[in-house]
Structure formats: structure tokens, C-alpha cells
Length: 137
Ligand SMILES: [Zn+2]
Image (cartoon, rainbow, N blue to C red; front, side, top):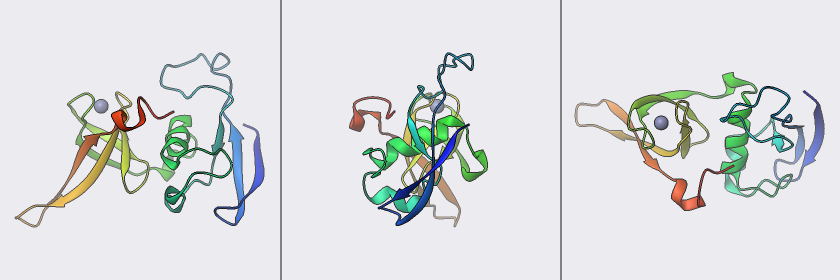
């Protein structure tokens, strides 16, 4: 993977940037992001407040790209919740404080945690594809 440094005016420091490989090289899995897309490896939750200045993309798109590259998977915490896409309880990769995506069907879910009367908490999902007119990548 070819990683380069670039100055991010949004974060006000250098970030690591890579370009996704051509999917035809690695065997091309349907869930892998398309090739030749800019991916910021230092995408963080704080980036969610404005468009990424390096790519011009809404943060949800960059978050999705990064998640789909499989790069640095430890960065992604998962929650177990019912997916709006496949309707099954699944492990969701948390993109930021608002979005998580289903590792099984790839649906982007809006998630939130609600407190129950018995002091337990549960994560719930809301399908958000419609807002972006399709899968956000
Ligand atoms: Zn799903």
C-alpha cells in the first residue's frame, strides 16, 4: 500500500493518505471499495463536522471508504444490533458517533443508544441510504 503524507487544513496537521488498489488486482470482491479512491487513514470522529478538504467528500463517505478498505480494522469498534438492511442481529462497525455499517450486508445504519427502564442500554439502527440516494461510496 502506497501511503503518502498530506497536510489537512481541516485537522491542521499532516495526515496519512492512500489510494485504494485496483479491485481487479486483488480478485475483486463486491464489498471492497472501488479502486483509485483517496482514503484518509487518519479520519477521526472530529472530521465528521465538515467535508473532508482532501477529497471534498462528506465525512460519512470517507468513513465508509476507510472502513471498507479493511485498513487498520482495530480502529473500528463494533456493536451488536439489529440491522435495518438485512433485518438480522449483526455486528456493526462503528463509523462515527452517528453511523455504523453492517459487516454482513453492507447497509449503512444510523445508530443511537437508548437507555431502558431497567438501566440497561441498547443500540438501535435506522437505515440511512435514502438520504444519500444509495450506498454512500
Ligand atoms: Zn445487515
